[in-house]
Image 1: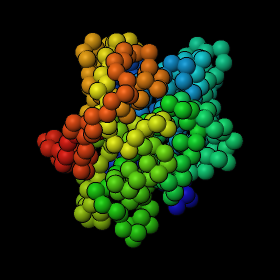
Image 2: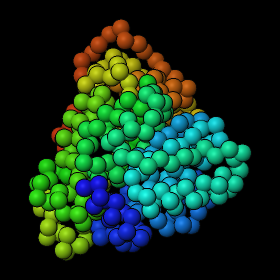
Image 3: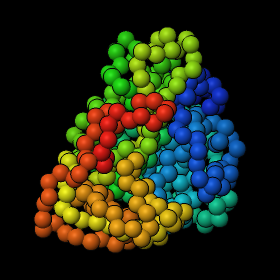
Length: 349
């Protein structure tokens, strides 16, 4: 499967227009500051990027970031502007043709961004075999990935390695494709379906199980959308399965519980995170307005207090009293079932 993916992304595809579906695309609506950063990336790097959107969580200044499946380096070069010269971005990819493009423009971006030293580096490797790259344990603040984990033949190893490499309080923030059921083995062997990010997609509930097994106790859905295939030939092969593009954030916090428990705690957002002065969106169910008292479960408290977001909130309450499960917590399938926004479940996370 590695060889098939390398051929598909190194030779078959020459740009995003060669993709046969929109499965490998995240939402292409992005804020102005991200578009400004993209405008500084070399044209060849942009041309050899396969997809849309960009996975960029908040508060990255000075962070060490690992990009799984970095391709031509587009996201790495954007993120390098957000972490600044004091931070660093490491990209990992298995495709020689993509890595050649990424490495060719290291000096260009260093000069463009005005950094005296480069803060980006690329490594050839497999995202399920990060232990072969001599990357130290607990060395990254954030790990990102943009529609690549579905291409790995050993997704459990990807989550396990990500947990190992993250610092305590760090997070895996990534977009990927999920299925509403387990994809049959007969379809997984189709190179086109696999390369189009469809037949390698995890059943959403299997993803949750793998994430929790790796140590990410409370996966948080940030956003999602149904995938439209819009290709009759591919639709005939796999159209009976529903697919979703979704962004999740997984925190490495040992104390997280497996459910949202209520301790009577509240937080108040100070409005001090760059580019988001009014509302902080932790996930799809936590839109925290500046200055407003916001009740949270114990897990959400820790996701704010025990991470790089700590200084941007005031915290009220403690762990002395437990009031049961947090009101409204729990869901069935987490994704929107159609474009009209009718959800299959509800709850805080």
